[in-house]
Amino acid sequence: MRAQRRLLKALPAAAAIYCLYCLALVASQRYMIYPGTMIGPRHGKPPEGTEVVRFSRGGARVEAWFIPAQSPRGALIYAHGNYELIDDNADALLPYRDMGLHVLLVEFPGYGRSSGIPDQEAITALFADGYDWLVREKGVRNGTVLAHGKSLGGGVVCALSRRRKLAGLVLESAFTGMDAMAAKYLVPGFLLRDRYDNLAALGEFRGPVMILHGTGDMVIPYHHGLRLKAAAPGSSFVSFNAGHNDLPRNKRYWNRIREFVSAVSALKGK
Image (cartoon, rainbow, N blue to C red; front, side, top):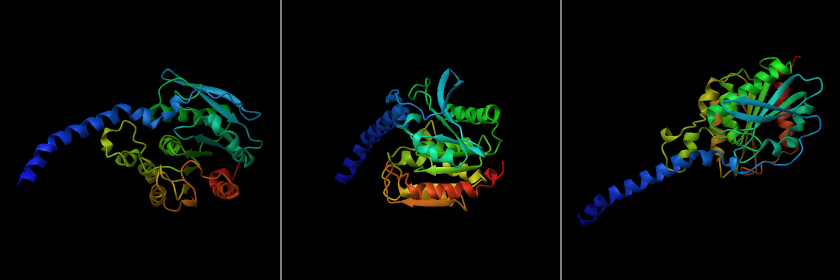
């Protein structure tokens, strides 16, 4: 009985501590989801032939890099991880250009040389602007834009798929939804401002999907990739003996992506 009474007395204090913990995480969630705002601008050069463009929306002015392909059959729009910049990925994505796809890397608001504050709505709207720019300014046919998202970028391109017609999705080290990530911190999902519900997006998406995930991923565990595959019947799944930030963009990686791109029906005709 004494132990029970002590427990009952401790419960209000424990509940108060938990509430304070949740409030602290809620207050800092944008910093946790978008830590790349603290990186600062890089000073690297874009690949030769790159066109630097800027999109403006809601007070944000966001930089994007457009890498043209010769005799293009479509385009690739890329969303990076939450602690990266477009500068970190441009050279690594050149194999897409060699597959006959224009490549457009859109920065997140508040990242690198871009102004604004990142959130799901702002980022998704800017990526939709990038898609529209490809169609309007570069003559890319609607529906021939493939989207590749890494980590948080997987959430971005899944959100984009609910607003624009995509030829296909490549999800690299992606999560099922931000609710599941919040659960790791014992925080209820309804407290999140940005949900990035990838499972729901895949449930609606009717195009081809490729999922790439490391079996040793400690940031976004492997079972997220398996659940994404289950949500997209017929999707391609490629596992790597790797973690979250060291997924090798090696010959096997690009061969599987090349096979996927070759099979995307929307990209077969000019």
